[in-house]
Amino acid sequence: MWKFNRKLNSLKQRTWYKDCDYHEYVIPRVRVQFSECLNYNALVDSGCSINVISLETYNVLKRNNLVKSENSLKAECYTANKKIMKSLGECVAKMKIGKFAWNVKFVIIKEIAYKVILGSSFMRDTQMILDISANKCYFKFQPKIKIQFCGTEENNKLMANTIKENSLKIGCPDTQMYVKKLIERYSNVFTDKIGEALDYEVKIELTDKEPVRQKVYPLSPPKLKIMREITDDLLKQGVIEETMSQYSSPSFLVNKPGTDKFRLVVNYAKLNNKILKK
Image (cartoon, rainbow, N blue to C red; front, side, top):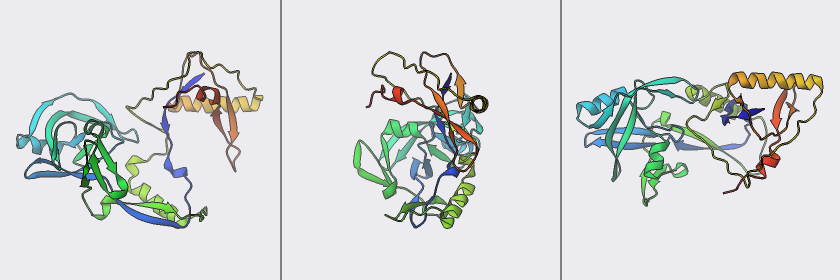
């Protein structure tokens, strides 16, 4: 029996379509102000659980007496592709966006792509809402005040595709080429390996406390061998882990289209029926 962790799959196997209209969107960056003459374009990254500044930015704040407090707590941070980045400590600095100001805690990293990164913790604490379609953001407590994303340079823009109605045609070489270039440009956030959502937990509530126990589906010896090989590989990758549980849902194999390979599928139908919908 195995417990499945929350995982994210690579985007390289997604299907792309012909006849796409392309719209230009600015990467969500906002102008942040630490003093009248010290401003940065900060990346707003909902996939990052912490706020981050580069060591260079921290030194500038320190020289200008803009660091309110600091500590030398060192820890390991992980990027989307599980690359380890060691923090050099933490600091708190007063930061302003538009008319609003906060004391923000930052983790100090020696080298990062952006000098300032505002993570999901900042968005949660300040009630920041991103309106990607309008290239603006606002705060829930003052929704009428819109803040424009900053930066118009070419490397601060993304192209998003909108599929035309009734024109879904598989196999769009131009789109595939564009996506390939996009992945190459931002290779540090893509990986061939199955990734993991770090620092994120999901609590699932059931309608009652009676465990769901189902019998194992019968498999032929050849398929049983294949299933063992798949589960051994998933254990090795850390996608699943061994566990002792009163819950048991049956698994089976499904043919991968156009190949002689199989993928593992678990039938969670009965368990899903007991999940409280909120």
